[in-house]
Length: 300
Image (cartoon, rainbow, N blue to C red):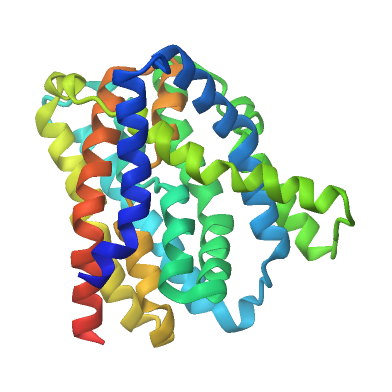
């Protein structure tokens, strides 16, 4: 029950976005702009700030980092393998493969503070810093290959990768921003979480899933079953400190990134199908994260 209550404020923001989009004048046209604002400005600034301000002491957090990268690598390998299953539509797979391994950083960072306080945010920021580039490489590659896009050009234009790399460089060389720039950047980043969660709610839709229900079940099975199970094994195999176990398990059980829909649309993928996957993953994640955290606690 405690873990359910931790997620309740974030879930209510998602519900709020859904209600506003469907029952008020703040319709889909408004939220399209909000999604782009979050994806291209607010969330990159949040990522940059979180990484710059977090101590990246890899000597003491190497097991945590290895667990996060291992979880994403397993997700990429499993989702790519589905391409070779007979009957899988290439366009649906290219569009939806990313859903199996990308994670909703808005929810991850919001939950980290509730699970482990400032230390949890720092640990999650490090996972985001390491895993966002890998996730975006993995997401862009099948879409670029299927749609004939230039892979490296798409990577070089991805705002999340650019923000992550810039944050890592700034952290490593010791860049610090003085007032009034630092408070301004913080306020821009703080707007990303509530607006991002409400934009997730505004985009909830399931209809596109009927174009490939078996592929959808496989991708969501990887996201919400295989990866949390892998996390439970990795934290023991890599000897991740006990206080970091909930962070790793929650990271593995996250709903997929809402920006997966934006990426699929921008690169000529099957947008409605990805929107359905994001919707169902969001609902599954809100229900399953407390279960996986309870399992991790029981096994500790």
